Image 1 (spheres, rainbow, N blue to C red):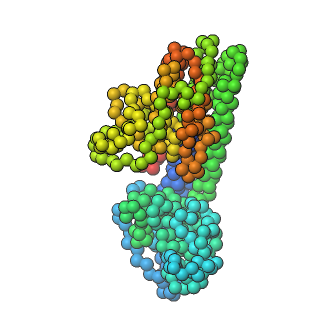
Image 2: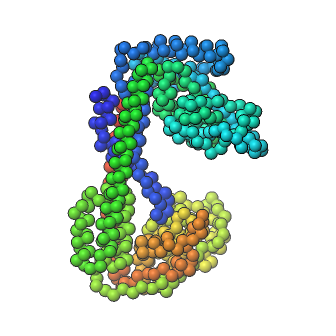
Image 3: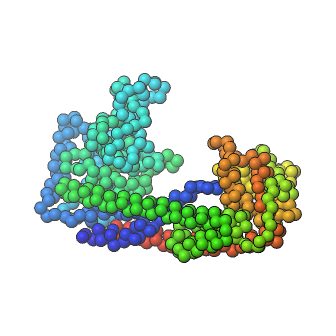
Length: 537
């Protein structure tokens, strides 16, 4: 087993356990795990491949210097015969190899190992240009795949004749040169032309197109670093062709590609195992927590809790599962199962137990650099108003926006429109503010603790109603009448306070568990990064 393979297999736990969580804003935003360790493993495999560290060198292989001489002769013959243009290649010294290549390899430039060329975009004011059968690829259609063939638009023979196009053949390698897609690559499965944002290459004899593809994939970060142009970055063809290219013997190119295929298949298996494990784990957590909230008798509830408690360390090992636990705590709280008092509960519509319910002014505030705080829904988090990034309005605008009700400490802010919908948080003590848009202000009545009301509005009891009652499509919202009709469970006031205290205690434990998990995940991500850096340094 090679040193590279040992590095890969000896640290499988690191590659599979290093994950990151990507989350979208708002209630119920889908959380998605990124298998960061496996992503870094894929990058490592590509980097080791193009450094000659993935497979051993074979002395009997024809040396790369002889191969390079043949390639140069071939290039000169094609130029003399007029089959390709004499594109001047200026090796870019800023992107020379940082490491010594194997002794039977040669260093050359991308421009010296193939015939390169980009395309163009036919004039949009002539619709006939886009009514043909010639496949016309754009940078966004490159998919890091070796079988790209489909395009969203085709062009006509007429457009081809008047435009500036390179005829790319089956097996040509394409690379994107513009925008966020810089460095995305593909191998053509059918003849095609491209727009100006894509450069195509027909490799010379002795260059395995799949090895070139692997090299381009491995250098995406370098291509991005070399780009220019601010909002629409691009890497010029001249700069691209000046990039160094590590040339192994042809037989070794094929062995490298075969080994990359083998190891990428291993990564696919690891990723599939992780996805299956995540789905199974999520289903188990959902089932066990669901049994807890569904238990109607004390004995069944105790049994359901015992099942969770005996496997707590293996159940709550992801941010998603911890968030599910939080939501279950809130649900148990409003069901009267968290604090066993044996008291009688009532239920009333929100408008019957609130002292005040007002909607926000239906106007966009005129912002100022300083003045009074005017809150926005993107500052709302369940149970917390984030004032770290506040915006301000003048005193005059502030007075206009508090005419219906002046917010005071303990009042509940509730988001009822937009992407952040169905979230409640309270006005902090000693905070002067007014309402922006897409929100309501709710003041609890005398038999309803403000903290308990906030808890209820953030619980699955209400958020599920808000989800079902949401209207508006692209501009989602919950109507004021729907909010006023929310069913609010009403235990005795003293019990409300005890429930809030117990929820605060348990949520704090969840937050501690989440912080420890995030710390452990950050450590694993750092280890994965360190292993990659050490391997390619």
